[in-house]
Figure 1 (cartoon, rainbow, N blue to C red):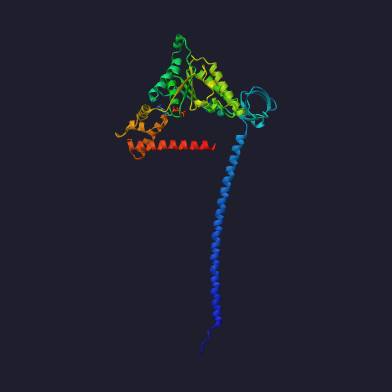
Figure 2 (figure 1 turned 90 degrees about the vertical axis):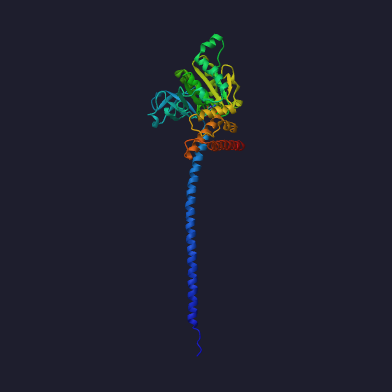
Length: 409
Ligand code: ATP
């Protein structure tokens, strides 16, 4: 008897296969979806973090913008404390005001305290504590610096001129009286960065046993109106107190550029600061025991008023050293280094074409670092080559990024 296939069981089998296929598919889809969900959850966390970071950045940028938009504050000194949280203050711009202060400030309020006032409403915005006094924070004071002319390479003429114009009037003022000439009041050093302007000023201070007082002129331009001129006065008073002293004003172009004829409150403040500086110099005895030296990299933008006779009337160029100068500087900075016999300072000097004194010093330090990395005690010619590459390439990159900055400004 012919056997017929069991239709029922076949159908049953087919259904089982379908169901198991479907279940497989379902599982695969479920797995994919779970994986997809996990991925999305991870992305969500990442995006939330990114969002938080951007929020923080927006907040800090907003506060930066509001800081830029805030006009400078007027500085005033408390002259009288009255009842009911009232004070009389004398502002740095001239007039006195009767103002109220907040309860929370009552313990800081005292006669002589300095307060910052809003320019429009003249309300007290802040009581300035003495630690914040820029007169203290912005100055570098060195009681007789440890710098001598023999540690300066390649600036023979400049050293001679500095001795004649700053050192001699401090050491031997009588000689000028006898000859009947007035020594220069101020000396202006100009030249590219890192060429030894500060070194020269420090060396004069050393030779004359004088206190070296350095201030970077941009420090004079503070956020408080009237602060710049107060600072200038402060520097001159301090110099008289500490006399003999050398006042060294670096980057003088920050307060003495021609273009500052503008009319914003910032420009006027910078001009007032310059006027104060000129007034201090005009009222200064040139044969006294304070020498004034200023330095700039941008002599071309200086206000001519600054270089009139009786002010910075001796101008000394401090250029990038020539090959002999470079060799002298290299000798100074390698004096205490152990060098391999293959190190030829002369060829380093001739290869370091555009290097300033500061670059040559960096080359020596870097060469030493390369030797240390190789666990050597002595520095080889190869170390110098690597150091020169590093320092001079860094300069090139800096120059490029400066050009880019100029292009985008
Ligand atoms: P800036 O214009 O940037 O203020 P500067 O002309 O005042 O620069 P300095 O501060 O005097 O430069 O020099 C920086 C460093 O470079 C010095 O500490 C010194 O080590 C080195 N240097 C520069 N010029 C000389 C030099 N002629 N002889 C020896 N070392 C030098």
